[in-house]
Image (cartoon, rainbow, N blue to C red):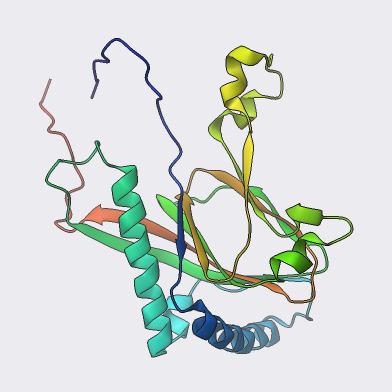
Length: 235
């Protein structure tokens, strides 16, 4: 499909990102810490792995956890996804809206400390991904780290122009390309949603408390099963 642009300024291809805060994280997160700790011990034993600075679980959390509080957390994730995805597609979807089916394709948790990090990557086989912060040092403790400072344990998102800046001439005319990345501070109860194609990484973390996050991938479809927005004609 092509669109005719009217004369004037146009900001094309924005990067949609959603930030949501769980309303009862103070009660939920300590429970999650205990539950995820049991799963970590079980999976580490099954793998024959010794405890280390970094742990990533299998991506089957949706099947493994069967608690009312967990079901409420999953509803929070799905509802937040609906809100963010609807806002991101405003103008692309029909004006009457779309009845959605949000599918969590995989959900897992990660624990890190002692300088552990997750290098730059994107996610495949999905349209949206998310990170929920379960536990981390308080902001004051976290940013007081003598080496990492304010970057301690943040999620760093790299904008689409980032790859172009390596050899780009930078002057006032393309100052809009700055900053090439944005750091999302880890806050317990905060859910970060982003397109799966967005390059990101978890910077090294070192703290009194482990950095524990829940990550997931999601696909979004029309409830009818037909995702086509435009008709096609035979040539």
